[in-house]
Image (cartoon, rainbow, N blue to C red):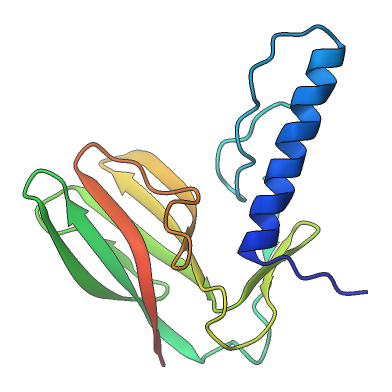
Length: 173
């Protein structure tokens, strides 16, 4: 049976895992600190056995999605300048944030992201749960590797002292 996990269900699953982990630790008289949220493929991963390990996850783009989307719209907020600007960036390209050394490598785009075991894929070709995989570097240092979600921009967000980068929308090919 094909399972579909939408963002709301994913957040609910995380909450259940956190409650279960805290309850189990209470019973074992271990320090009662909540484990970190599970990470998405490629992000740093906790060693907690209660958190799903998606570090070996793969991305599968269904045929109905291939070639339908050509770019994404990224919203870049400059905290220093107190400004925000939208940029259209082609899938598969590397883009430099203006006025910075930040480079954004834009990878796969999934319009209706679902996670099946350790596979990231899309349930449809409609913009129901849009997400884009990015790698953000500054100089030679990788700062972020993971998914940006347009409906849930605070879920696994890119953290930087000056800039915030979020997925705003997708652009058809």
